[in-house]
Length: 312
Image (tube, rainbow, N blue to C red; front, top):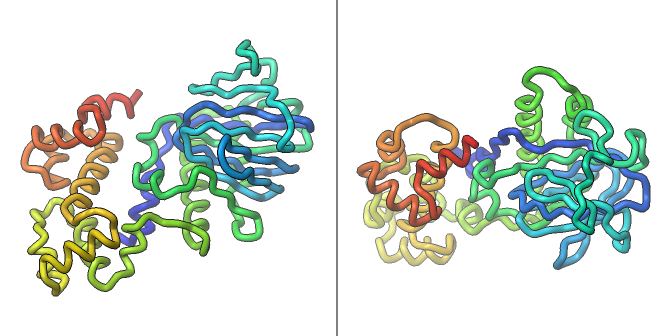
């Protein structure tokens, strides 16, 4: 598995919130939905993304932005426009004073705003739960990630515009998969940019010593690895590997392996019906009890609770 594949295999939308938003200036929407990841594709017009901290980002037609939650932000036609609506968890929409909008801005199937032919049109897709996005992927992203139309071209845009307003059997599944493809295409383009800041382990894959060790851990997490065994594979001493790995990756080899095993377990709990004992064997734990103990220590909930939340 190459590094980028390993990083991008995480997105698995399930009943994602997806709409076509249509606005005429002046307009502004305050987003406080605490969603782990939101993708905004500007189809027509201009828009600004304004975080509470840091500089705003201007979007033009064809540009895309990814917002990593849970921090709030405002999407507007201009930095000074006061919000007209507030987006809360679960896709609930209120006026800024707290009164519910009660559908006053609904324009049809998954279409929302002022009028369908407004001057500004955005396609917005939101992952509702962190479990739908790999934790390693979220940790690798900045709070706001812009991609200009000059560096990113997406053939999915016409298809998304058509499908988002369609009311057909299985439509949620179609939109979920399209959203996953959109995210993967966007992040692949971003990671190719010189300004991208991938995680330390990603950059360490290019190191002649640490890179092969990381690939061994990622490709065969169930093996009973030791630092001595990894050092032998790398052709260096145990102490030299431990120092170099920790310096480049930011944590010792066995700590990284533990995090990788538990991340795999979290994804498989979400995506499969395998028993905990089977998952323990797949990711390198000697028993279901050992995996459950380590998982709860890392994620704060038991594996079964994690699985139940992902299925909800």
